[in-house]
View 1 (tube, one colour):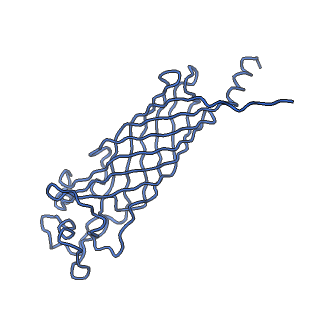
View 2 (cartoon, helix red, strand yellow):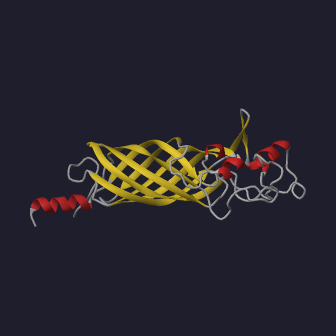
Length: 258
């Protein structure tokens, strides 16, 4: 083995890379008010993150994202959704920890390892707060128990983020990344829609506003115990976008030899 290849292997073994990044993109959701359409009603989103790469193939990342998800039955092509006539929006705030796998060896700031596609998987904690529009006012839905819940759902939950992306060097210490990342949640209430229309005789509404926002259909008042959502599936939210990654140098500890 030549001295140059030995040097190259030594650099790989000693490789450590630290990055700070900003993400700008969008967010949307899949759930009862949007069962299938990807990127439908996407809203602006952004985030910041720190990435540590101990290897040309692997990296670990922690970050913060903020976005908004929206659903509106009136914009659906399905007649049953238009008849249901519900709407919502919710701000999503998440803190995540991710592991990344690069399909190709990648290092920011080099000509030989300047490009790769990658996968990521991790865990996050997120908060949400669904609201519905009534006239010109947005009203918090969780306290209203619009489906007659005996116990309100929690507004802070965990999710499993995963996805795909692409990394590319721009300058010696600046990289560009594109990614798309669904979040598998364990709640069906991102949109405040899950089960059936409640029976007000058994579970009286907390207020007149709660009654109005529970059933906004064309035949409001005649849907008692009818299906309002699909409790067999959980809701998803998705972040996507482009990020700029900035490498910064961390001074290595001194190496002492005998």
